[in-house]
Length: 107
Image (tube, rainbow, N blue to C red; front, side, top):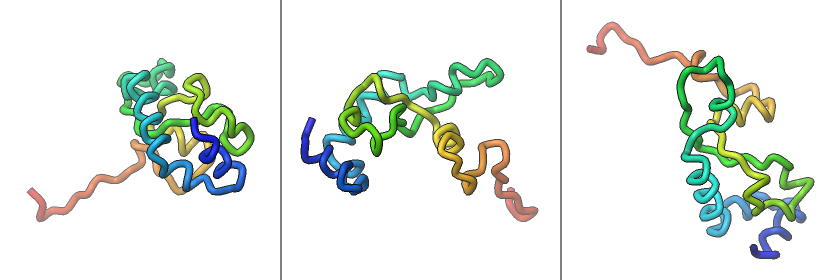
């Protein structure tokens, strides 16, 4: 892949990398390979359903391993919940904790 995109990562401009056409095409290939299924939820035997993957996660982070940014073996398809939990982002509310809109006037 493009050395220019790898240079963006090394320079700390990941937003340019993730907004590139090359990344978007690569991301779709990873999602297709994994059948758009969260691979971590799929391995979790306590969950009884398959969750749609919307995120492609780098197993070895691009900050530390920019040369692996386009390596299919370094990427896995995840649902947003698994990805946010892995990175310790507290703002994200898991699927079960999200409140559904409810109003007595709604029918």
